[in-house]
Length: 249
Image 1: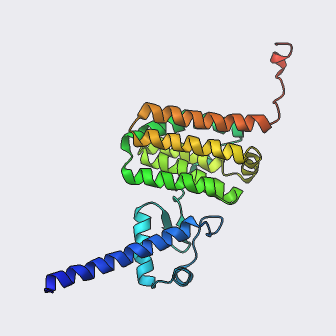
Image 2: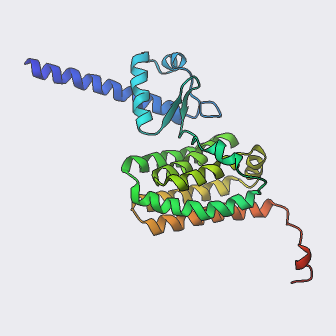
Image 3: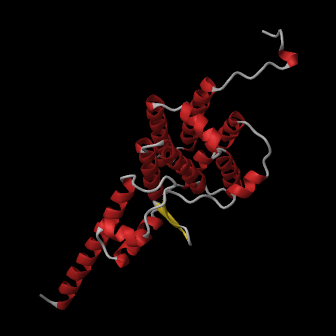
């Protein structure tokens, strides 16, 4: 066997080993055993759980970060999903009192346009990330996990759309809707049937984005948000009539 062939075989073994480690880490993430906020165990613990060296683990994490399946924050750790946008908290501070339905109305104005832009800019890797996030949302074991993955799904669409002003507006709304009381309210409007419908709508959005169908992606996102708004309206108390509306039926 000549030296070039031996060298190529060694490279293939190394590549296969790294790919195997990536698959192991990905399987670990998909098992849903991370913390409620999406944080993974520290590298020392993760190497023991997966059974690989820290060097190989770090290479695998680099690959998954490039794929958009994890993100890292210095001093905080490694997290599954998409990172929060740095403008969220600042933008939320500019907003006064608002209601959950006002936020839904604003989402209906912004997110369909972002979905249309995403259909024009999304790469195959982005489509794969969206599919992964949609699957994680459906299989999430609890309310916090559902919120985590659903938010990451919508945030990735906003990021891929590559429109900074609209991304800032989206980030503001995403921060507002993270209010714990509103999360509890949304969980009351959620059941197995609504989760299945939401998953179907997520998949419809992804299909239109993958097809490069901007108008179709916009319509699919509007349908999805309208469904969410209708679910919320069913459990919200009816607002009182204003004085000017009394007797107007």
